[in-house]
Image 1 (tube, rainbow, N blue to C red):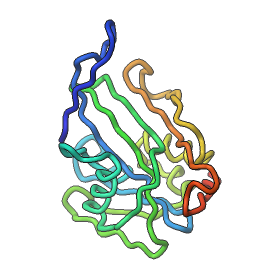
Image 2: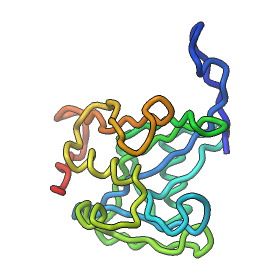
Image 3: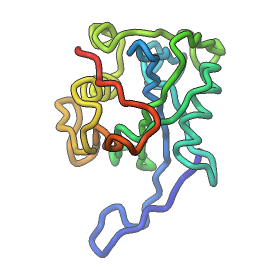
Image 4: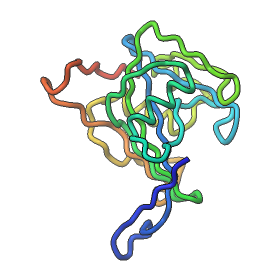
Length: 190
């Protein structure tokens, strides 16, 4: 796990602090299904979450998303862009978490290792949001993406965490028409 020094101006409470950096992937198939994985350890044990992991020294965030999803599920995905950023200040060391939108082929079949993960599911966003074993952050990210996949990154008010300690920005600025070789699918209804 990489710990990054964060610097800021005078009076910045994060100035000089160290943050761990995590990266997740909202993996979407061509039919709109999203990939969720069930963890076997830690605070997410037994709960559904986005696949992902920790940034390695010198690694680009986008590369981390693709690598971690590949390591956890065996899928070769294409990174599209950042759709959410979360900062946690209520843990030591503080943590930054970046979520990328990743594209997977419609016939993609995930394979989990049985050690870190014990299951992987392709679900519609509505099916995922109806489950009671979905991590709250995952639910918030899915809701925001499904409602408007072209939205700019902006803070999302949370009712389950203190706003001053747990910050979540959702959405993602999509390229304008003509800037991209692949059309953007609208998010599925939830």
